[in-house]
Length: 143
Image (tube, rainbow, N blue to C red; front, top):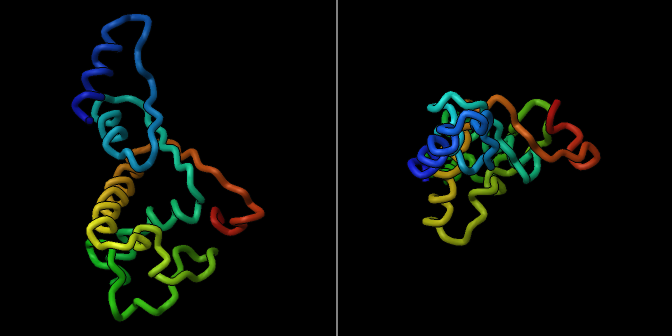
């Protein structure tokens, strides 16, 4: 997909009056954000799920570094039953409730976690994050 997107942008940008100025992509399509960065185009990421879920995705490297999960997204046995904080203002959660761990089989969880890691990496390349937030449901998610 990245190569095809780059070709499409080059084709569109050949016309003087029809240049691409911004890419808006779902956070789970980190490759699109990387293509836009490479081509010097402004970037925005859209996250349609909860902000709490976005926070967990953006925290994946911190969770790996802290020994909460391993490089495949699995919870480590020592932390399996402990509660964790994704941010200072958010309530505690169980590591087994991280959204990529909820699949029945490990290969699916592992594949999903690869998408999560790529999205987290690409999110650092975005200029804007567009997300859905209901302060009544997630009052401390953005504090």
